[in-house]
Image (tube, helix red, strand yellow):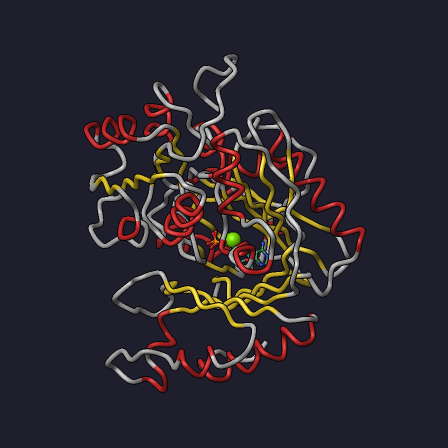
Length: 394
Ligand code: ATP
Ligand code: MG
């Protein structure tokens, strides 16, 4: 909490208004959770049709750094959070002058910048991929061969694999940095991944911390495609190490709110941290339907000072992302609605659509969580749903 750190803040109870910076689908699901607990909500997002703005009591339509918009949000909201990690930290700091803000701008600033993020992992004693920071031609020239083949990633504003170029040779690296307009980048060594997992923790302003069971994540083209819980390949040792690292990463920045850390598990069993998101995460969407308390409810609890409880997974599940591609089956040019009726005829399917009118390739339009009595049953139903929707088997 950045405001009045040493003052004991009162619990902000239902009936109060919770503000959120950003109007995307994460904000929408946060608003749903807050409203079902009896809070009012206010969303700040310039887009009149933003997924969260559409369902919020109040929608302030300004840019993130608009002084009047920020003043209005601070006026109507009793506490404020963010759903978008690239909200300028300065905006959160301005809000924190008069309202409790969680997570704090200082934490969000670390997560916004891959170079700072990696330094934070290292400072916590958590391994990350071998890497070099490239901000100058001299740093580019000094890159050692052992980092190739690698992935050049912009330090800021990357998501869903955007702002990333895979490079095999030094010549490709030089060309890639030019293509990225020579902005600050991190070159990461390409690692042999056995599989990917993420850990979502929630940390309260009193330092209490809880976590969800690990998720196993399958990415396609740099975008999350499928999340499976319980994580089928994870050993107890991997689970314990990843959870301990995620706790340490949150505690050492005095983090308040929900934080997701993504990890790679390598072919030799080692675990390295990839990146973190200072908010609920796409790999935690299943928690709405498969857990007794969702990641969005824990965000509400953490930012208001309500008690946190260790979440329990009550149903094995898979989460399938519904990307805009599914609206154009077989390459049709006019967008058409997928066959939701056929999917919903399958027992255990939970459909979430984000209210985005225009489908585009790679755009996250919604997700489908599939729960089952056993992991095998959930997987069988998820594969049936995927076949109906045109998602490749996994
Ligand atoms: P998002 O924010 O949507 O999670 P992003 O654009 O920030 O994605 P990363 O998480 O850095 O991107 O990378 C996306 C995916 O690319 C990873 O989940 C992984 O599958 C692959 N990847 C990234 N870095 C490496 C690496 N060093 N070695 C091997 N694979 C990698
Ligand atoms: Mg990622």
